[in-house]
Image (cartoon, rainbow over all chains, first blue to last red):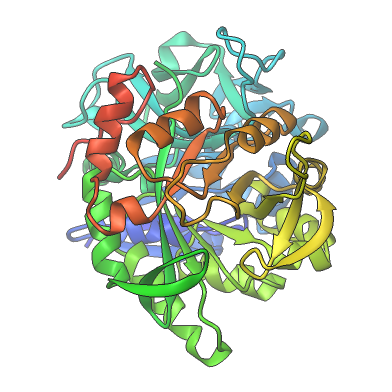
Length: 214
Length: 261
């Protein structure tokens, strides 16, 4: 039986992602854990999280999960969700500037100011709600997901990958930002697939089937 | 296209059943919450809000069962409120499967609670529910105050400044209910919706008074709300969520067109 480890480092609500993965999983065993050895033994890993990146990196370090992740990146399929996408970049300007795991060269930045839409209405931060994702390349992770499908977002920062080849999906919120990034066997999404109804569940199912080839 | 405006059905829960009253009186039974949640999800609801209005604390456990069941099969954001007074309440609801919790009366007694909850669990899961009434005399400019106890008790707190204060303490979203309009089907209070929406940096959900699809449009367009909350028009089958979205899309509002499994 294939196994999926959800990395529990105390940041936010892991119940939703566990519930959604269990809902779409057929044979896989879904485990939520903070133990580096248990997680290192899983076939695939999910790095979720909500909150601020400073506390996130401190907790990953305190629980010795950062070293485990650095070792496993490139070895087995890994999915980052929301704060997880930020943790996978080189650096974030959030929390006064924080070095992250570095799976993707590039930074995480705050949405640009002024926070006003082109029609004069106020652009609310966080970017909260349903928005569309443009698929920037063909990939098994997009299987059976319609172009421009809607996903649920909640975030104030977004990633800026240095290598445009790593961008697999983009979204408009006053500016166009990378909402899905991908390289080798690591992929990460800014939105919450576990809260994005059928499109999100399909993406989770695709991740469980993905052989980890870019 | 950009961010969609959200349509959010609200389920008032009493002892594990969905109920609906007019201005908190004359409660009518509207059905089983899990069944209703499933139906709204299939119709394309963007989120669901559950408000526990159970009076006695021993009956409150049923809400957890409801949240847990819904969270196991409906994969859109779930907000749960009613009786959230301390951090353990927040934790229990998040563990049951809520994505956000709504804090109302407890914020009035202790605004710091909003800050503590936001610090511990993140602003993204802390919604502040504020119930407002226009207390100005006729012919005067409107002046809104915060009310509690289903609109019966005034707090004397000015509403716009209060919303700003709670956001500065860490609230990630504001659920704004006009107690003048709640249950009346006469439309949102557009003025207070616009005033709060302009005053805070976070999304505002307009609530209280929806009777027609036109009312939803006004709340989003004239009121500037990011989302609209309604119950009666959906519970009693007057409109489906899909009809509401089709109507709004026809008037140029960005809405999510869901495709279903």
